[in-house]
Image 1 (cartoon, rainbow, N blue to C red):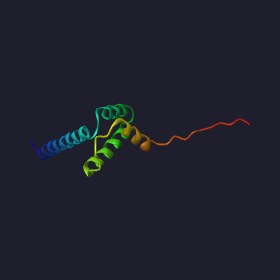
Image 2: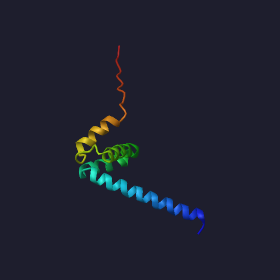
Image 3: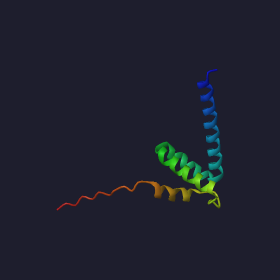
Image 4: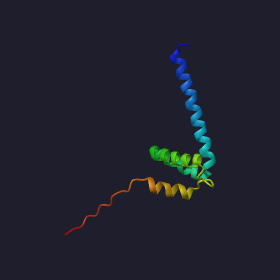
Length: 93
């Protein structure tokens, strides 16, 4: 085995461990409805879903979560993170 191959395998193993820890944290920090909502969001806006997951992981790891995040709280986070769309009104004179 070459050193590059060994290094790549070590990186893959480290990435898999990080991914598993992330999933375990989210499993504990989210209710099943909230997980389903984030999965649905991921299909349309993967960047937004990742942002919400990162925020929830930060809350959980800092100990600021008292109970699992439910669907309503995820909706509130979505509202806060989504770009505000400008409303265009056309007035006829």
